[in-house]
Image 1: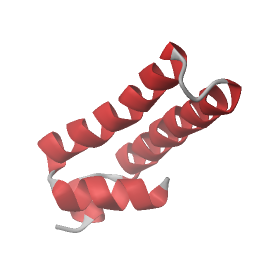
Image 2: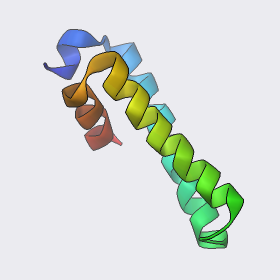
Image 3: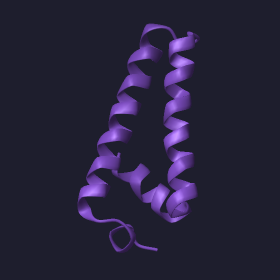
Image 4: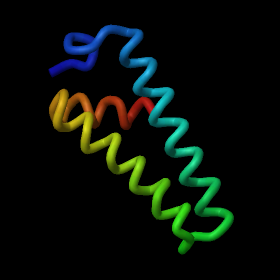
Length: 69
């Protein structure tokens, strides 16, 4: 499945923005303290987005969005 076939460009852009935000947040927390609760929570948010994309759109779409981020 191609990303563009399943999702419109606005949705793709929003998913990319959300993924980038979550990843930036995780990296910032990791730099502060790799073993903190905030770092773990941020990491969980990144994983949750990936898992949700897989459930909603399938593995191929989740991988393509991850590649955009």
